[in-house]
Amino acid sequence: MTQGPIDFIYDILSPFAHVALTRLDELPADRPIRPVPVLLGGILSHWGQRGPAEISAKRLHTYRLSVFLGRARGLDMRFPPRHPFNPLPALRLLAGSDADLATVRRAFDFVFRDGRAPDTEAELAAFAEAIGVPVELAGDDRAKATLRANTDRAIEHGVFGVPSFVVHEPGGCEVFWGVDAFDMLLARLDDPQLFEREPFRHLEDVEIGIARK
Image (tube, rainbow, N blue to C red; front, top):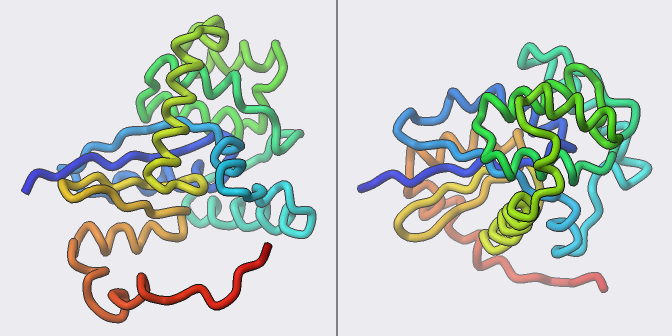
């Protein structure tokens, strides 16, 4: 059976995506990895959610956890002075240039290794130089359309947060959210029928007992 690609869905706002990048070499060599920049704000709005950094009681915990997980993976992480910041122009640079994984890694290093937020004219120019992309691309109509299309497609696939891994197969696709789901992703790739057996099989049949409005 032909093995489909795996989409690495990211927004440069996500420190957990920065950590997840360190594990990509654990994925099967025969599965192409496609880095896909999306606007997390658009995804959160679609599903009626708030980002972890937008919840006051969760914000510091989120930062501590991402740095802790990063250190475990050998990353020396430093947060930018503002977070969350407006990632839109920087994401357009990545989307418009069809950035490969090496470029994406440089982008995350700029934000979470060097601790810089590409949300001012000067810092966006520095970001563009760091990843090797013309800064003018941030205003390009094709770049804007590509980022919108990426975000819409991710929502269609069921993506609700970043980082997410979308595994494409002949029967459809499956979403794995978060760096903490990476081991489950590896197990599923190793055993395609994993979720068709107990104790996973019955989970799709669990009913909603109460819904908050």
